[in-house]
Length: 248
View (cartoon, rainbow, N blue to C red):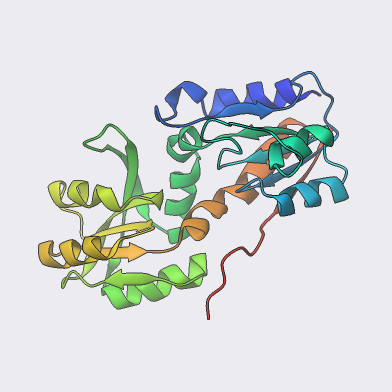
């Protein structure tokens, strides 16, 4: 099996043409015709990820966050791109297209949270969000539940009413607070929330939860491994969940 075989399969699941305009997805580094016997799946492609791939003899790294996001002005020996090429390791990145796809990041987040009656919602900006229901509970109890299933640390504000209808956006989704208001959701679960968004949420009566960027997205890694392993039984897929951010 080749890098292209794996990319073509992933592209059927999460078409690259569904990614946001600002995004950079697909086969971003390496030779598409290179044979793959072992591949590593991780949220990011850092030097730690690269070293893990080298240690395990991987020819391919599959990530959620693009290894190349902004235009490159140079590729020197200190750069991750140089060292990927030097070690003959390709990188496929599936970002916003995997966020919104069936069984993608947002679906996995809903399932991990335990939401019922999961539905899709097209946001005002055209982005595809997910929503679902929980047994009515307080913001404090829901925060404790999120911590128990996602880990990390939960920041939240209490909208002042029981939570039943929940809007979900993995990663940075604070700007979707307007959509939560328009569609009368009790809560929004996302990450990377700025202080003013908590103030705004409190004022409009919506409980807002910052469950961590890593924690709301890393939940795709193990399901993606299972999907790929079922399709390519000749390839050994491994996963990597590095601890990047620590809490005092």
